[in-house]
Image 1: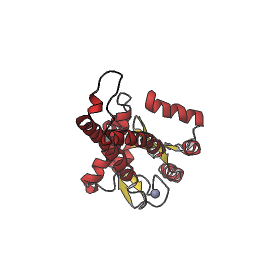
Image 2: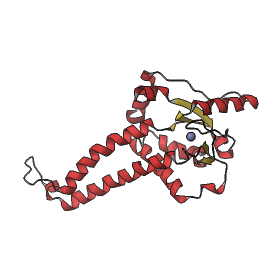
Image 3: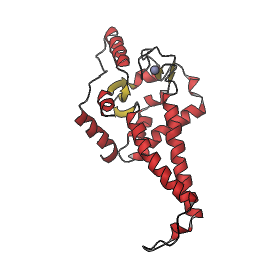
Image 4: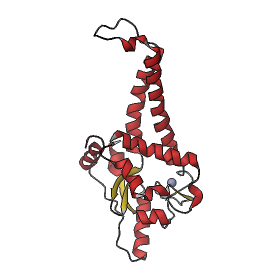
Length: 216
Ligand SMILES: [Zn+2]
């Protein structure tokens, strides 16, 4: 896990290139040949800023996955190919697969909580003495809470994801260094100043960044 965090490449990508579909045809996740471009909406500065809003904190992270799931379910992203991030066949559903777990798991948590509140008399007991045992739904709620919350953090932090929104660029964490190299080569060919960075952060810096995600 620590090694994985330390290895995560931070990639700066021009929003313009996402919107126009001019990124190299190399999968952002693994560096293989890309077969499709997806999620052009990430080139929209206001969309990206929602997920990274410090005020929303954990809900902002959840919003990112809800957005991905919405796009995957709506199925109308093929309107303007090839805009979006290039992805290979194996990774075209990298984000939607995770989004299902994140969003459905969260809805399950809310559903169990509501059901527990409605059906379990022990939830309504006041004072320090608990006389009634929690019912099955409440036990399930607690079990799911202990499974889902750590899983959410682990999956979120280890996933390729948006971690920054700076000026005309977004920062993608956990992307492929091969993609970074392809991006840099294309920029050099075009005579542009390089924007891609693959600086490996030290573990201390990564922790600061991660801590900032949650508590900053
Ligand atoms: Zn891939």
